[in-house]
Length: 289
Image 1 (cartoon, rainbow, N blue to C red):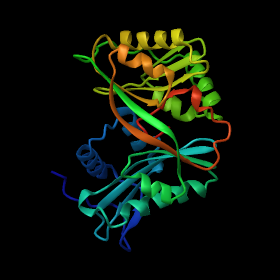
Image 2: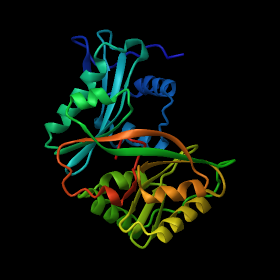
Image 3: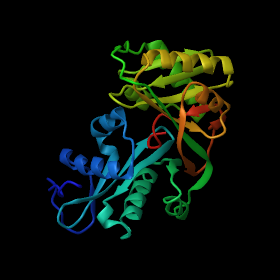
Image 4: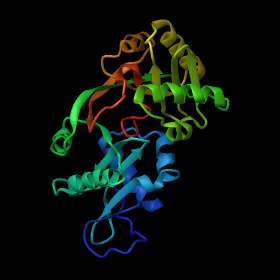
């Protein structure tokens, strides 16, 4: 059952006002996300509720009740739009389009040259109507162990973080150091040659990403994957949003990962210096890039 609509601290002058969510409104987001079967990683939720709180927008009705959410994640020259979700009782009223167009306008007004997102087949027509085009696929893979590891992760070393940021910047054409620093807090970074990957922290679900590999060396990527599984100590759940067609994908089923769905990678604008072939996996489950 959905929670009762939560009153906002903001004054509503007209129907359909878009603003920033207040803490209790996140209960609505989580309830709707559960109905959709979304997995919302702990680290991502924490970042959007704290450091990136100004990157979340909520659409409220005339009674100050939240009716939809969308998030944006801006980097130096690009940005991602994600977590577009509407109250199931209000679908088909154009609220999703209004929220999405607000996010696009917000980013465009700040000079963002390239916009990215991952789309379900259901949401794809909306994005295509706003000028987005398909550039690839994202395959989700899951690994499950019997129990959570009690092993505490060591603090991320500056050298390892630098290696991850450098590999990520080479693949995406500009630095995303601010986001990666936030996601890496409490996580573990693994490097092998020109390959680097982040295992993000989490209580029940951990995200393996970003995962970058300049030369896609099979030995380096096998080494990374083996060390990741060793760090889990046999327990927990790990999700990887893999770039479709990546040769590294052949290693995942051997390591015990199972396919768990697919989305479309879409963009608007010029790709610039992006080298998608070096991106093994995204830094999030489709919402942050």
